[in-house]
Image (cartoon, rainbow, N blue to C red; front, side, top):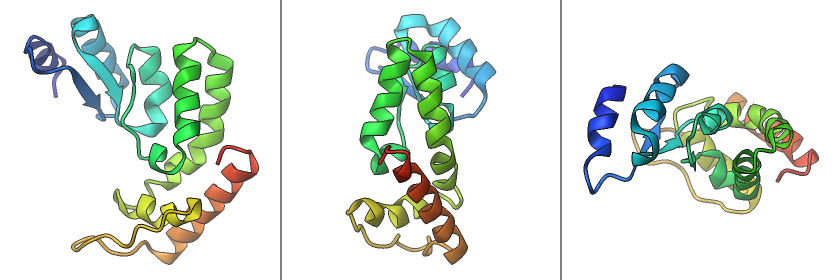
Length: 152
């Protein structure tokens, strides 16, 4: 939505926050500038959590957190505590897995990945399909690499 629309929504007593998933960092900056503390912003894109929180977002509504809640929390806490070296390190370490979780339309990859952490959750309902075998292999490879870094 347009930043000006977000400003109008921020005035409504029943609207507390906004999941920002446009991918447009300039737009997020404008929303944060216009709304200030009147609207809580949350990153809706895992790969943009670090930059959006640096602009004032309060956290994220995350796909990655379904798979790695502790690592996602650690990233957000590092940003909130202004520990940018730790936040950048976590961000860069998690980025390949974040990207692989979007190799197909959500929620296909995350549902395919949940058994990797011991939570089999079944397949998606129609019209969604099973994950493509090459995408599953990519997801498993990225998860293994992330696990080797001690982040799983």
